Amino acid sequence: MTLEGFFQAMTWFILVYFVLLNGSYLLLNLMSMVSLYRLSQQRIVDSLPQIYSGMEPPISILVPAFNEEANIAASIRSMLQLSYPEFEIIVVNDGSKDRTLDVLKTEFALVKFPEALRTRIATKPIRAVFRSTRFPNLLVIDKENGGKADSLNAGINLSRFPLFCGVDADSVLQRDSLQRVVQPFLYDDEVVATGGTVRLANGCEISGGFLTKIGLPGNLLALFQVVEYLRAFLFGRLGWSVIDAMLIISGAFGLFRKETVIQVGGYRTKTIGEDMELVVRIHRMLRAAGTPYKIKFVPDPVCWTEAPEDLKTLKNQRVRWQRGLSESLTSNFGLMFSLNGGMPGWVAFPFMMLFEWIGPVVELGGYLFMFFAAIFGGVSWTAFVVFLFLAVSIGILLSISGLLLEELTFHLYPKPKQLALLAVIVIVENFGYRQLNTAWRLLGLYRWATQGEGTWGVMKRKGIGS
Image 1 (tube, rainbow, N blue to C red):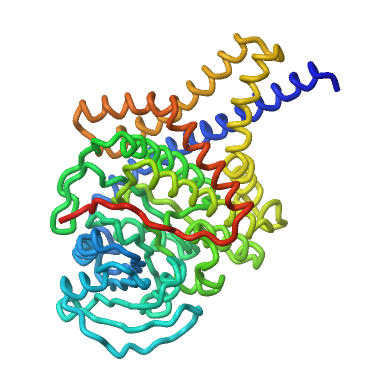
Image 2: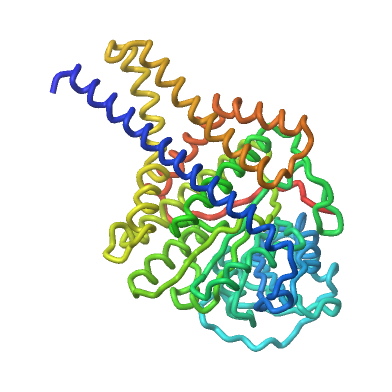
């Protein structure tokens, strides 16, 4: 192949890849719009008295906590005030090195309790179990450090109810979150898991464990992430849910059928992407067994969480996410194109492999190739500029559509200046921030390929509630 032929072949490959990538995202966006329209119709019915009111299945809320003294009290207070007939809260202190356990003891008047331990999933040793003398539905487990997945498994072992909801310790739930996220379980007994929307609490006011005023952060990095979260949840996961092919339920807020999770072996402890890995494994194992099931995304329930506001913490988070994605896909590779794979195995898994897993390599490589090809005459500078313009324009279009879906459906940011600021961020994020994220994802891919097991590390927090 001549040099000219090489440049031509690579140029066509990159162009086709970018067209497929952005075309797929636009298709997900359209499916999300249809789903949100149906949701708006369903809301009319939901506003009427519900026949299930007070009859929902009890839920165990599992809260793994490691060095969470800044947020743990506000998070637990918000959960204790949830509007739901019957639930228990199980906080798992995973060998914290700060005052997490002391804060819990002081805030909730904990005393040691001789709880009967039933080990259905192996975990690190449990040092003590505490119950609150103020809140009978609050249980605290103190155990040796084993990671988030190990903590969730310990919580599953001690939980009493058929459904469990994993919630991050730095999160605050809206009062009706459980009522909404449980609804697919009420309508269809084949549902084994549901996920809710996660929004950023940076810039919001939280008092008494509940969000009292919605605002936007003053930090530029956090503003970029507000747009990212809108895009990821409102047309990413919602679009996949429409075709029953959702591979990710956020570890910050997900509801699972306990027996199904135990059946597939619980959370995998040797991964830092335990939330996605569990969902992909559920798909793989239940489809291989021929078991009917459904996994749904519910956009209404909102969980508010704190986002990183400095480059170092944000970089570490994105590197971990990409490593977790790599571990989730490669450990469940048997799902792709499997005989009973269905939409998850034949559409969602290949999409994740092609666009999310190796995407950073092709995207950054594409930018670099087109630049050097223009320098050496492989493509014209006009073609290079057109390529950049199209790549950036489609990125802006996708972000604007996410903002539009938010405004038309939920209208969480009612002030005109808030919408104007988000509209500016939608444009600005495409000039540097998104490329930086791609570079961090590439670094995560490299570390997955060259290093052993990862750890979650330290998340620098300001605290999300008083």
